[in-house]
Amino acid sequence: MAVTGVRDLKYRQWFRGADVDGDGVITRQDVRLMGERYIAARGAASGSATAHRLTEGLDAFWASVIEPMDSDGDGKVDLREMTEGFQRALADPARYPQQVGPVADCYFDLIDLDGDNRVDQAEFGEIFGLAGNVSLEDSAAVFEALDQDGSGGLDRAEFHRALAEFFYGDDPDAPATHLFGRIPG
Image (cartoon, rainbow, N blue to C red; front, side, top):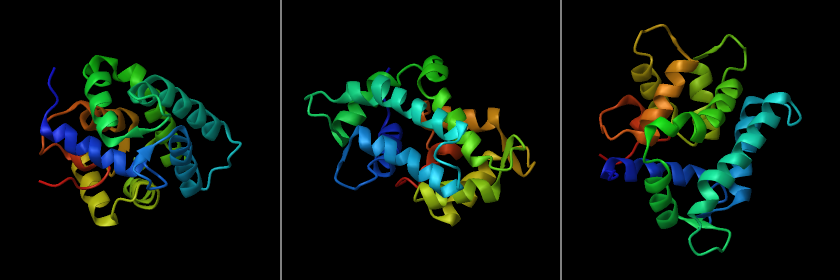
C-alpha cells in the first residue's frame, strides 16, 4: 500500500513533536521525554498507575515501531528513517489495536484528568497545546471537527478513530489530519 503525500506531511508533523530535544532525530530518550511532557502537562504523578502504563506503552512503541526504523543502527531515527518506517509499519489499519491503540489509551487517560471517560475541549486543548506544541486555535478547530456529534466531548472510541485517521488515513480534509498541528495544505 503506497503512502500518500498527506500521510508524509502528517508523519513529518508528528516527527517535529516527537523530536522533543529538537536535535533532528528521535531517540528512546525523546520518546520517554514525550511521555514525561504529557504527564507533567496534566499534573499527573510520575509514579501513578497511568504514568507507569504510559511509560511502558511508550517503551513498547519505541521497541516495536520506532527502533526498527533505525536502518543504520545508530540508536537514532531521522526524518527519512521515520517516514520510511511509518510507511512500512503503519501500512495496515487493521494493526492499529496492537501498534497505536495501547499508547492512545494511556494518552486518553492522561487527557481525561477528571475521569469522566470523555475528553472535553479544555482538556484536549491543554494537552495538545501545552504538551503537543499545537496552537490553542488549531487545537480548538480540530476538537470541534472531531466532536461530530456535538456533545462537547470525545469518548474513547472517538479518540481512537481520530488517531487511526491520523496515522493511517489519506484524506487531507479529515478532521484528524491536523491533530498534531496544522500541516501545510
